[in-house]
Image: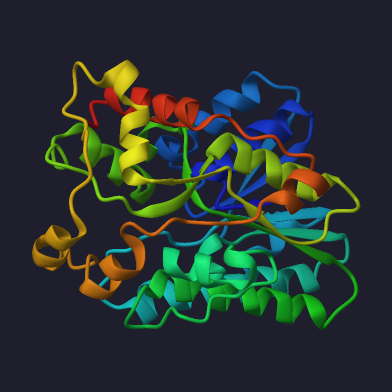
Length: 342
């Protein structure tokens, strides 16, 4: 079973499962919405696997029961991803935590389930880039938990932290199934459903291409990973018996300016991509006025601060190799251009 099967990461995971000849129980909010499920139907028609849709809602208790029936492996990928919210408690924290509880309670009541692979985030490990270099050894590992996010500061990170902690708590209280968690950094790469280019992950690329940042890009430290690699990590976490615990799934330590520069070779002639860094002092001055997320605290903790993570566990235990950053960015940008999103 895959929760949130129409999602960005989930789409590539479903594709992989279908290619392997597996029957996928796709748990989605609107099974009859062909705009959301059409790309999955298309893949099912071209692969040896089968897809079956089930109506389920993160906030509806017991709604995953039918979708889970007879399944040995559950991928829980559904969770809200947005940073623009009016009520973080209601829009981020409750759906993330309650959704996790609802899915895992259904797992507890489904004897066939032996393993759950949960999509968490590196946001459950850190809030700001400064946290990564302040971590033991100067980089985050799977042993680190986010302690700096709050309802008032980076509530998305808080929602991911609380949801993952709840998952480990529920997993630890039983012995029917085991839990494996994937913690991706910023995920980019081509969406299987082109409509996904409106999602939060793509807003930064849109700003590179539409001239918003033509005067300069912030050197904001982030981790980056390709959506296809994240899906592959989920698949391996599900089917490799020895996989266990958390996996930081991040390929590259980079920043926004470096990402923009990686696009120059292919797209620099036709799009006003940023070529230089916007100074930190200038961001301090205008950032809070331009974007409420760019508070002085945020700028201080993320701009000109490198992002550091240890991804050796996912490489060693799941035998993961990652795509080059330029491939991920070019493939993402190309889809956005084709869809008229830039």
